[in-house]
Image 1 (tube, rainbow, N blue to C red):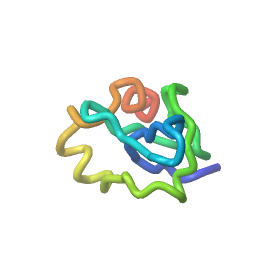
Image 2 (image 1 turned 90 degrees about the vertical axis):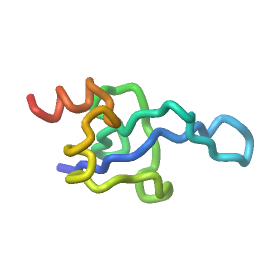
Image 3 (image 1 turned 120 degrees about the horizontal axis):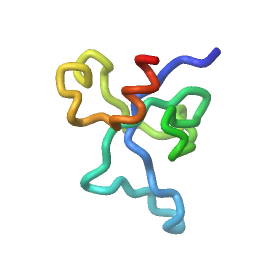
Image 4 (image 1 turned 180 degrees about the horizontal axis):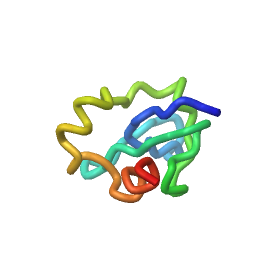
Length: 72
């Protein structure tokens, strides 16, 4: 069982540049796959995370599908 890590998804398809879309929501990643199954990324490599407590106080910053899967 992996630990849940909340991170912004990073677009890795732009050559050597790593980019986060300005309207991106935080996704819950477990074993490098988002709970909504939309993204996969190395959560140890990227530092785009947020503290879970801060995110729960601002749920509008999170992916709705990931939140729903987390509560299931």
